[in-house]
Amino acid sequence: MITVILYTAYRFLFLRPKIKTTMKNILVLVLLALVGFAAPAQVLTPQPSPAASTSTVVGLTDVKIDYSRPSAKGRKIFGDAATVLVPYGKIWRTGANTGTKITFSDDVKVEGIAVPKGEYLIFSWPGASEWTLSLYKDIRLGGNTDAYDKAQEAANFKVKPAKLTESVETFTINIGDIAADNKTAKVQIAWENTSVKFTIAVDYDAKVMKSIEANTKVNPNNYYSAAVYYLENGKDLKQALEWVNKAVEANPSAFWISYQKARIQKALGDKAGALATCTASWEAAKKANNRDYQMMNEELQKSLK
Image (cartoon, rainbow, N blue to C red; front, top):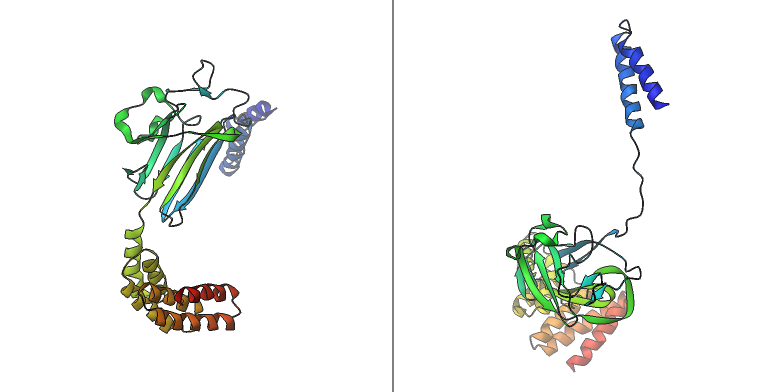
């Protein structure tokens, strides 16, 4: 039907010279639209190894992993047998399709190895008692393990596998185990009954210090954040006290600020001053009906007696 319409339109346009130019232009547009409509539509079907992505922020660094997720489908995944999907000791693209890509927004350390910010492919050599993993600089390689060039490695390291109590049907990568100080996280690779993890370490101190220097000059409200950072990271406590005093002056009724001031005073060895500040913070928290800070101040008071 479309073919007949197109042929008729062609004859009408180009074999009848008396048609006005405006009308001819309109008909040309209609003809082009029909040609686009006539193009065959692509049939969409589910992919056997669908694309996936996981990301998080560690410290101040964005970490993102893009990969494909094959499923076991009754197959034996890891082992020495000839029938396994991923043989021990053989290079693996750590997933499917074009491989697995990890991206860091800042310089990091991976298992203690310095790795510049950027994009890398993750390759692995599974083993029964030890895995070797590498971060590969040339992401154009994709999943082509035959063209692997060791000179392109940004990092090469070994980790110990662990046996999972529950089987993982679909290949999965997670970023978790973020440390309390936000300086490390672990990437977990899990499939079948096997899990391996490797550690990413970040250093955000230089960024924070630079931000403190710039922003406390522009916005005095940042003195509070700067003081807490100094306290919790073992930096110059006298500087922290100076900053928190400025924050208290700007907002005397802020019980959360005076609570942190009491903590700084305690760290400096001024128990009497800390107790007085803590008591004032407790009273302000009670007036604001904030039970959380009342309890926090009560715990701090106990430690000062």
